[in-house]
Image (cartoon, rainbow, N blue to C red; front, side, top):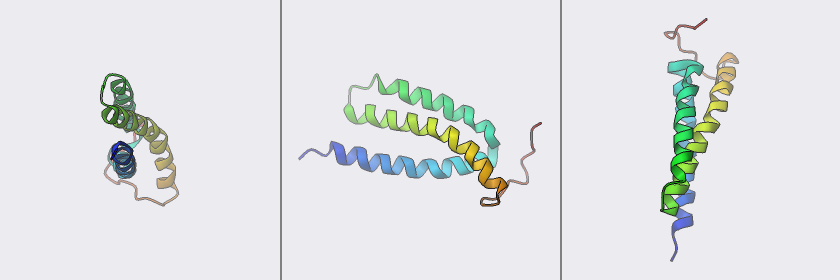
Amino acid sequence: MNTTGFIIGLATFIIIGLFHPLVIKGEYYFGVSIWWAFLIFGIAGVAASFFFTSVILSTLSGIIGFSCLWSIKEVFEQVKRVEEGRFPKNPKRMKRT
């Protein structure tokens, strides 16, 4: 029995599920400046996917990398959601000018 597809599918589901709160918490504590971290980890994940010989590791590295890159967009969308009042604003974080 080949379980590769199942493993990749389950891991993708979990990764996407983990990135949702990562974006929310990242924006809450760091604001939009967190996008740089998502960019660096995204590029690293995508680049690493070229060097793994294992199909599963290569695929998961690519999924994590592209999830990080997608999270950049989501961080800026999260700012809009906070402004609309759908998520709490961090009162302790100072706004940068």
